[in-house]
Structure formats: C-alpha cells, structure tokens
Amino acid sequence: MIDTPQIIQTTAQATAFIHLTVTPEEMMRVFGPTIGELMGALAAQGITPAGPVFAHHLRRPTDTFDFEVSVAVSAPVKAAGRVRPGERPAMRVARTVHHGPYEGLPAAWGDFMDWIETHGHTQAPDLYECYLTNPEEHPDPATWRTELNRPLQVH
Image (tube, rainbow, N blue to C red; front, side, top):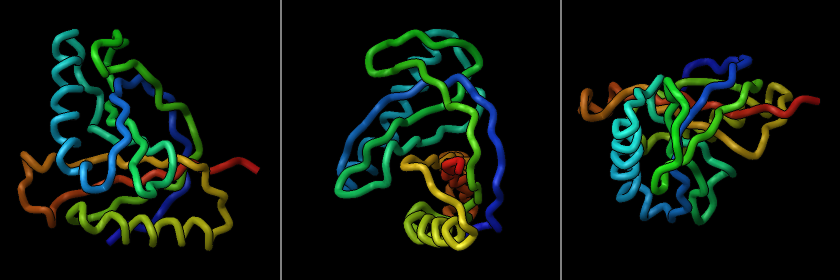
C-alpha cells in the first residue's frame, strides 16, 4: 500500500555511500552488512547520520541492482575503504510512502510509476528508496515504512 504521491522540491544534502552492483539473489545477503560497514566508517570518523539509510539506484533494477547504500551525514566524510563522500542533490521528485514488508516494494514501485506517468511527469533514470523504519527496532514488517522518491525531468 502506498500513500497518495506528491511532487516536491528537495534540498541538497551531504551523504556517505558505498556503491554496489549485485544480483537480486545477493541483495538480502549484502545489504545489512553494507549498512554496518557504512555506519562503522562514520563512527570511526566521529560523524553522525543526519537521517535514515537510503538506497540510490542509479538505474531501474534489471538482472542486477546498481546502487549506492547511503546516508545523509552531519559533517563531511573522508573516503575510507569502500565508503565515499557524496551529495544527494536538490531535485524535483515524486514521493510516496510504502507501508509494509520489503517484499511489497516491487508492486509499490509499479503503482507509483503508473501514477507518475498517468499524471504526465517524465521520470529520470534513477530512484531513491529511504528506509524510514529500522527493522531491528520494529520487527513487525507490517509497521515498516519505505519512502519512494523518483526524480523528475524538467521539461
């Protein structure tokens, strides 16, 4: 289930990220440890996350996911191991929130992209998934919320 989508303008924010290219089968195995690696690198630099973890998919997933496991940060990050500094740019996006387990995300994205097309917007090639609920703190998947953001091309 998704909330009614909205069109909003975001502001730029400094981030830290680890780039991954993985198959769908590898995704669940590598995602959690990658978050741990990212948070460990931030802690080692004395930097606090300035928001929830998000995935910046550089393109729509196909037989592989080409994306960055990211988090907004409170201070500039120095490259360390696989961790890189980055920026989530200011952009015009379509945004909604999916309620429920991650297994429902493909259908939620489908409904969301249909809404975007139906309302005459042109989607950029990338997309963002922001994990608003930490599964370790909220183990019931029915309570999970994932913010879906699709950058829009300006005509």
